[in-house]
Length: 376
Ligand SMILES: Cc1ncc(COP(=O)(O)O)c(C=O)c1O
Image 1: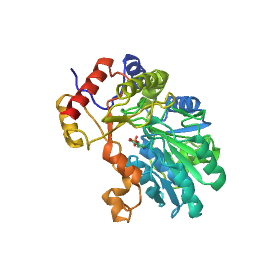
Image 2: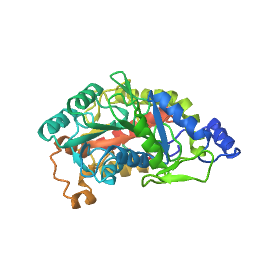
Image 3: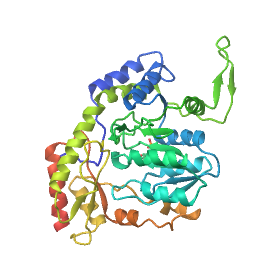
Image 4: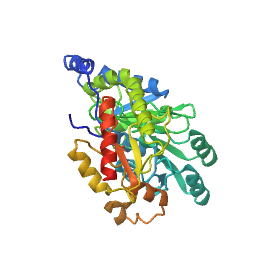
């Protein structure tokens, strides 16, 4: 049996052909395929504008520069990849870590309390963890009540829906970001996108992506003005060709992820040692399938479980170590926040293999192996 990783891309001949077609064309970068991919992602999410960039971190970087001011306080989650919180620092702003709820997402009720207590908090960065978006009604209330800036980190959640709101539509936020890393629901190799409904923000993002440069004259193609300090965060036409081809299959990929997640849930229904992080949701797009394992009752600890599963050809992962406890953050005075739910979660969470090409037999093998090892 082949090695079963926790996540992997699904690339087929039609993807390869789409990439080859661009390789044979006039534009490898800054060409028509970039614009076509941006338009397709904006349409898919129901957002007005989209700006493609070279990865999700670059998307977070330029969005943060456009949305935040130095010194501002930004509520965010400890249960995320480093990039979400790091981007707040990139803009000279300050992350404020709030505990998570039982579903692994930032606790928006706690956010509301923090906003009541501290009117100097200006923004919220919410991550739709594992592909299960945060409560959109609560997000709308925070936006309306406190007038804060909201960014949705949709790196895990393309294809997801919550309260009738599609991830990335920015219905109750200023901007959303995506990552198209190979473990995500669809891939461009590396790649990212910012979506927004705000035209002025869109223009800023486009300039930040490309050295802060603006072309000033159609008649003089050599002329440009640098209006701000930007970057080369462009995504190539080659990547966007793959993205466009993948986007056509995204709903199918997500449907298979949901099917596998539902079956995992059925395997673990009333299980004495293993519990799904949240009950199956037909609206989540399942980048990750996370379980909580009762290691106190199991025959082994998490480290041994990872080693023994790997020996059986199965890759597990852990999402995430609390960001605020990282050495860099500790050096800046973070790390002692009260986050009891995150701590309990971190002690028990394990991400199981989940990707469209995972077969039913492989999934059953993962479950069987997990049980055999946990029971000793
Ligand atoms: C929640 C979250 N935000 C941002 C990123 C950054 O995306 P990228 O790896 O494309 O830079 C990731 C990547 O895994 C992520 O999981």
